[in-house]
Length: 380
Ligand SMILES: Cc1cc2nc3c(=O)[nH]c(=O)nc-3n(C[C@H](O)[C@H](O)[C@H](O)COP(=O)(O)OP(=O)(O)OC[C@H]3O[C@@H](n4cnc5c(N)ncnc54)[C@H](O)[C@@H]3O)c2cc1C
Image (cartoon, rainbow, N blue to C red; front, side, top):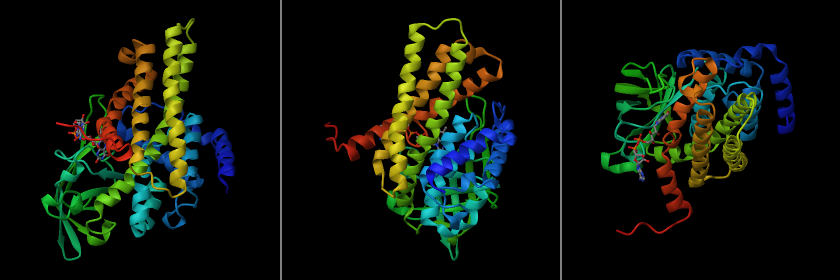
């Protein structure tokens, strides 16, 4: 199916399928409730083949490139359906696992695509976030296994994830990024404890993971031993590029909801219209950039450090939209007890993290200054 045929067929399906109605306008009070509902939506999309486009046949997909996935997110959001939460991790981890460990993706990606399981990203640690090369979670080789010890932190949807794709240290502590490896770990392996972290919003979206003498077969490596940094850099192109596109589709749909709430009022001030226009432009700027990135990824180009531009535009647009909703609908987002206010509130809280997750805004600007613009360093 060509990309144009796919869009037309998908749009017709999403508009006409009565079974999809149960996911429209739903409010989920807790993250486990949301994930249970979203994995059922993934199952339905899988049964119809819709979320299998854009993934290799060998990994349970139906072939095609990133543009098919971009169209899926665009159409879901345009039809008032949620982009299923686990797809955020699918876009982050799926391409790297498929590229560097095709055997693992042949076994496990079909389960992810069918909603049977999702994976968590185990990179950050208490002392390693922006400075990821400082991570200390150790993997010691023991014949045909690695034995893992350490802690991971801020794992999105980590509670309930079936597998954790972890960046671990196989070299010496001093080896920094040269001594890292990527490995896929079963979350139910003996020695793993996953604890949900409840955020200021009251929602437990993240988790901390403790690994105590966890034995992982050596054939679970993603890439070769010592290649972890290269795998992580490859992965970041999707974590910052495709993730930004996916998020832009959600932002557009939320802007439509905000518009509908605003126009139901008797009058709108010039200031309200101007503010709405400004955040709309932020989202359009994000989408223009992000569409180019998706096309480049689809053509097999390397985006490299330029993906930081997408990440900064995303953080700006995301915080802009939810700040505008909070201000323009005041005081309902802060104190409203209806479902719509609860949703805006949860999203506003989450948008605070937009300048932190996947690499902080300051660090992205540093990458652009050093590696894209090649600006001279600061003089002491
Ligand atoms: C909602 C959310 C979801 C997340 N999901 C995941 C996940 O699924 N998996 C995962 O592994 N991690 C995840 N993270 C962790 C995230 O990647 C880290 O929080 C992020 O990389 C920043 O690291 P840190 O929190 O250790 O902050 P730090 O690195 O300690 O940074 C603290 C402050 O110092 C600034 N700073 C640090 N270094 C520099 C520098 N060189 N130049 C300028 N300023 C600097 C930062 O911008 C920041 O303001 C998530 C985080 C959040 C908030």
